[in-house]
Length: 383
Image 1 (cartoon, rainbow, N blue to C red):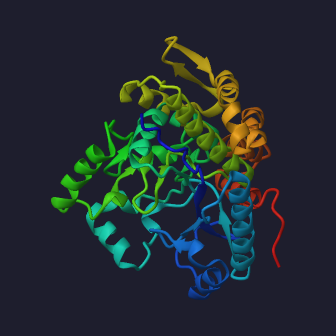
Image 2 (cartoon, rainbow, N blue to C red):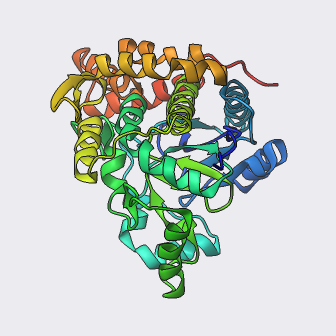
């Protein structure tokens, strides 16, 4: 019997940041060309513009483990902070801006983004949001599809630990991840379909390509998808984490879960499949309540506090984290539950400012200053 070789489980991480004015806290809707030149001279192809001019994306190289990826992310954040500071700007790692108005933003002057703006209209212009994507190296395409089918169950758990978008358009939305609500207005988003094989997946993609609806599979923006460019399974559901150590924890959890699912397959087992409507319910609970809430345990048919689910998850994937060399980073999920995500800290900053007599506008501007500093949390400055 043919046994699929163990995947490499290499890791690459992409993070999107907002560009903000250091003094006013407002989005920098028309960044200096010199700033971009300096950033690209320092980081090369690892830094690229995003759809909106007030956004920037970084991407790590292919790393052997999450420790390397985290170190690279930290260096890129510090480098960008230094360069942008020379232009009176800063990066802010949060999935929404507390008071920016989307209709005031401009998209990047590139052909790809012009086509997107024309194709998607106002839906695209509203995308003043940032996410984090984690690529796991899985060379075998059929295994990539099999693991995609199974890992869907754990996407709400990862989203819960990453939430960083409670504010939108000057308002507390009541959600810990408002970004998800905004992104869901785009086509070809949400949970992926279940496919029996790589060839079945490719046949479905080809239908859209032949009809000239999409150019290629990069225009399919599911919460987890086979990468269009790399032999990886790309997780896309999470908010961007304000603190880089939280990003590393999310990446460690994702890789360890995939390794666990692969380990089950080697033992002729697999994770039970559940209907997308059930998983979607947990995604809603994750974006609405975050770590303070609960998710449905479908096997038991009950809601379970998220803190308890994290303990169960850590226990289940510890053997895999040991093999991948990321046990401390997986276990740090407990700290996120205890201390709160970026969304929880943001809400507290605004509550405190309002209690001290600040107006809503003053409180939100104070929040941006807090987020600028928190984006550099634990990072060493670069010269």
